[in-house]
Structures are given as C-alpha cells and as structure tokens.
Image 1: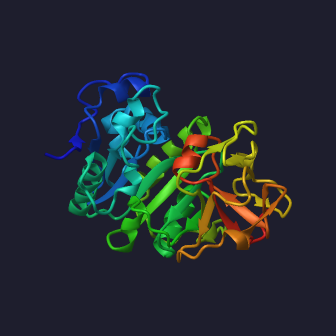
Image 2: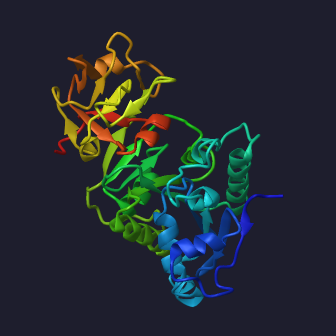
Image 3: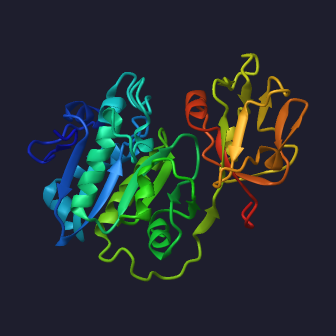
Length: 344
C-alpha cells in the first residue's frame, strides 16, 4: 500500500486557514489538476520538510479559487505533492523538519528504502516515473533569512530557464545527498526553489507565483527574452559539525561551536577576512568539517582561526545560513563559495 494519498481538494470547500486544511489531510497527499494539454504533465513537490510551509500555504490559497479558476490557468496537467504532512502538523506546528527520530525525507531519494521516510520517497519517485513529467519543481523555504534562489544538480539550458522563471540566483552542485533534485541526472529536469524564510509573507507570495508560472507557461523551455539576471554559483562547500559536536548562538553556552548572531544576514553576501562567523571552544580539536564536492577537506584553505574566532581566509560568499541551532547542527552551518563574481 502506497503511503501517498490521491485526493480531490474540490469535493468540499476548503477551510479558510491553511493549518485547518493541513489538519484534514489523510497524510502525504497528491493532487492532480487538469490543464489545456492533458498529454503533458508537470509536478510540483512541496513540504518535503515539515517546517517549510510556504508551498502548502500557497497551494491552499490557490485551490480556494475553485477548480474552474485554477485549471483554466494551466497549460498542462499539474500534479502537486504535499509530502511531510505529519511532521508539519506535529505540535508545535511547522517546527519539525521531519518527525523526531526519523530521517530527513530529502535525504531518502536513494536506497535504502527500509523505513517510513524511505518508503515515502520511493512512492514519490514511483509516481514521478509513472507520470513522466516535463519537469519537477521542489519548493522549499530557506532555513534562515535569505533571498530566493534555485539549486540544481545539472547546469544546462533547461535548468537555467526554469530557475530564471522564479529567481535571480542558482546554485549548481555536484554533491549528491539523496535529495529529490538528484533525479535530474537520470530522469527529468528537477529544480529546487528556495523561496525565502518560513515566516516571511513574501515567501508565501513567491510560492504562489511559482505555482502559477510553472503551471501556466505554455512552453517551459522556449527561448525567453535575454535579461542576464541569473547568477550561477558552482559547487559551494558545505560546512558541518563533526559528529558529536555541540552548537549554539549563546556565547555563554560552552558549546563546541558558537555561531555569530548575524550569520543569517550574510546570506548571499561576501564575508571578508577578519569577519567573525563563529567562535570555537577548543582550537586544539576543530569540531568543523568542510569538504568540496570531490570529498577533499578544504577547511584550512577557506578559513583561519584567530583568537578562537572562525574567519574567512579569502573572501567567501555564504549561502543557506540559518538562525536555528537545531537545523545548523543536524544539517549544516552554511555553504560557502569563493568570490566568483562582482556581486556585493
């Protein structure tokens, strides 16, 4: 039995609040909307993480317009998958990336499939393969304050065109973590769109724009007017804690690593040598790891330690820094890329 429920959201009027709709969902849910050309289909996946609700909120608001209004604007069929429903509604609502004690769903899109998130990821992949979509968009919130950006596993015309529909920045990574976007290598164009912070109304609005643009454009990959606004960053380095290390934002906590309180404000900006990104409790045993996409350790190439402060050794642009210590500890502190362009 598949853990993915096929639902018709138009059987009854949707409740006015997205959290009330979330409470009524039977679990991970799939919605199939019908557009002008039923021979083609696109798929939007959202809520892979339960603490990233903008896709759910935008979907709810859009569906409340009614079937006729929604489907009238679709160029092709559009399938929407709402994944981590249980994590999203587990109290406190929208605070759990995944259910306590379970794996991150967006690390489960490769074997093994032995547990609940693995089986759900496998079911989602099976649906995608059966549908054969033109493209898949995986809609997320950033874990901290950040401009919207896209992430792709491949750098080609199709992924650049998709990214340019929604934002001005695209990160291309060769790192493979078992994320949904890894499907792009062998199956179909798959783009992650990070639409901003989970508490940002602008992120909810952008998520709605993503739904409408992705579903409504007659030809996804047709040539568009040249704007030259998409900036592409290749293979940023993931900075993580070493196993068992502790992390905090409180300088009095005694944690192995204490992140700077302004770390989120550095997203997509260049940090210079001398800027303090974090403090280390013990410089004899550095509880940080940074490896490039080939697995080569590069911590000492990119960072210096001065009076227990972690600072860039060269100008570095930061991405995906968060203000939540639990996410920074369980996922990563941030990504960095050496200055590759003339952005401020």
